[in-house]
Image (cartoon, rainbow, N blue to C red; front, side, top):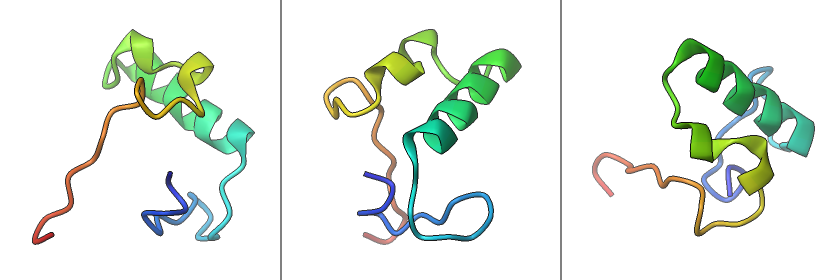
Length: 57
């Protein structure tokens, strides 16, 4: 999904790996800025992952 949105990885690359997405979700949970149900166990199931609105689109 992140690749479809053309969202670059933290290092600026185009290809996202599951471990990269999991690390960011885990970090967001620890910081309290992501709901706990958005954990890495939901990776790959688009009905459980929150959507992101794009301004102007």
